[in-house]
Image (tube, rainbow, N blue to C red; front, side, top):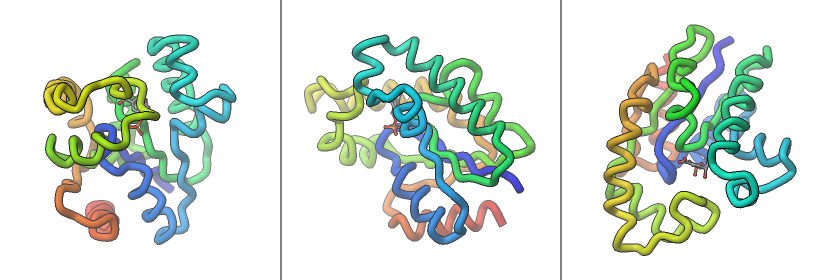
Length: 172
Ligand code: S3P
């Protein structure tokens, strides 16, 4: 059975949507960030602080490959940056998985991230007024990689339940 890989910018709802999708389909959910944290025995924030982003990207790539290698069916939730490093975007096109880009607008992302930035090292220390511009530029840069996903689901103005139904529809 194919694995399901959910991707998208920080704050697009990957984890919440994956948890709901997991409940409905009874397919186990694996959060890439959580797997990295468990293996390193450190939080993502601590990995960034102690070893830097480049080291984090290496762990992220290795863990993504490890999760893809396991034979069990699973829903894998990537980190916002995963597709953008180490040629991970090419892995999104493998035949043995379904990759889905959860696409959110700058406004949706800003509204969700402005109060949820503390655990996210890339934006944790950013002032609110610089954050919108940062998201806009960053999303533009990253879209090239996100668009390598096999499917796209727009999450703006959709409830988690509606998005889960949208995902099931694209996978049907
Ligand atoms: C990152 C997103 C985070 C986490 C790390 C880097 C990124 O995951 O992997 O802080 O580069 O966008 P979420 O998208 O789950 O916040």
